[in-house]
Length: 232
Length: 228
Ligand SMILES: Nc1ncnc2c1ncn2[C@@H]1O[C@H](COP(=O)(O)OP(=O)(O)OP(=O)(O)O)[C@@H](O)[C@H]1O
Ligand SMILES: [Mg+2]
Image (cartoon, rainbow over all chains, first blue to last red; front, side, top):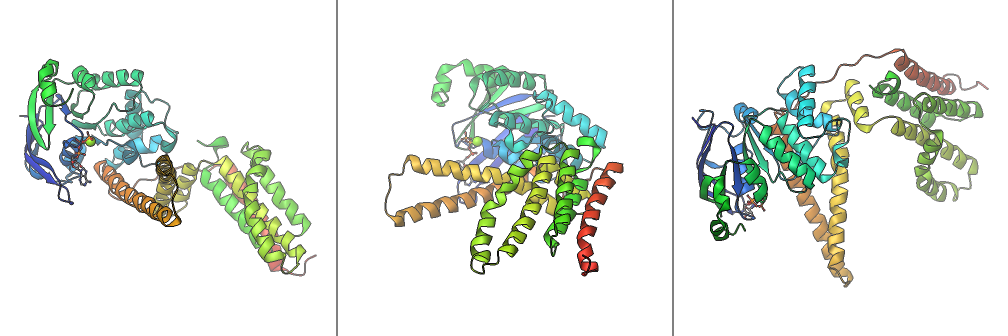
């Protein structure tokens, strides 16, 4: 049984733009899947729909639970979304407060919350950031802390939107390590082919709101195919 | 833990009481002026805030003072009253500067919540603090972007561009608000948050009592107006 099954997902923005036109795929527990596609292909929309932020038409089955309600507790606990813009993700004043926000809402005890914060910050190489002000972090630091806020919730499925943009080469390499060490399943939307190759076992390519490729990652070695989908 | 174990709300409360005293002071005799200065100095020494920095910070008051003098004092020629107002304003500014330099705003907000300020209010303030910066930098970026492609023009077009920028800023803020709220809901936000329990120590009580004494010294004027 797959961890996540998406069936015929459709979404139309209020202004009439049809961003998803029937998207279907599955993700198994622990599987890491890359999500490619041109600007405007619908990657962010798809992630927002899976997380339940956007109420898309179609069926989403999570861990065997069919027809998930958009804001159900299960969905929030099991799925973690990291927004493309970290300024949307970090809303508390200090890093500690922000990373602790989710675990506190899960009703964990204080020592447990503190432990989760520490582990999550360590995982993104942001140890000792606890007392720093979120709005004074650099963009790359914000991205890493944004990931930590979601890691601290310990979801089964991580949805990452452009996680490597604005990371310096060292951080990007470390970030690849983080992803590879994590046991969670992930769906990673990115334009960074090398990142996808280094972390994912499968790729899905979106084109104008439709899945056009769903294959093992080795397919990215096929230059003709990349050219055909204008990813090159 | 903040410096010397004094909780931020104790500092906030103390400065609040002190400011209250200074602002309400009806006559400001020299001896009380001295008391106020001694209190602020003691506060700074206790929390390791350099006095020079506090003094410099308190200068932010100058433009306001200028206004008061121009519109309030010069027309009437009542210079004694001008001095009186200026001194009171400066004392209040000193207190705020000392508080600002000794306490993180975020910590202060937490403390205020512990003192019973409703969560909505402290959340609102903390969001303002968090996003004001972003809003300003966004506005600056838009201005830079405009200047890159702007080669002058008549006033009308200037206003039109300004209107566009403001409208755009509003929309961006609005949509960001929406996304931030979604990010909060995704992390299980339901509207309430737990409050950290802290304990107060001797020094907390001392700082607040000190401020209370200052307030009492001012209150003397109200209680027995014929003293001195
Ligand atoms: N809030 C919105 N309102 C209306 N249309 C939108 C909105 N957000 C996105 N769109 C449109 O929906 C389509 C899909 O956008 P989406 O953000 O999902 O693309 P993306 O694949 O994430 O692109 P990118 O690589 O640039 O991040 C685009 O055509 C976009 O213009
Ligand atoms: Mg996107």
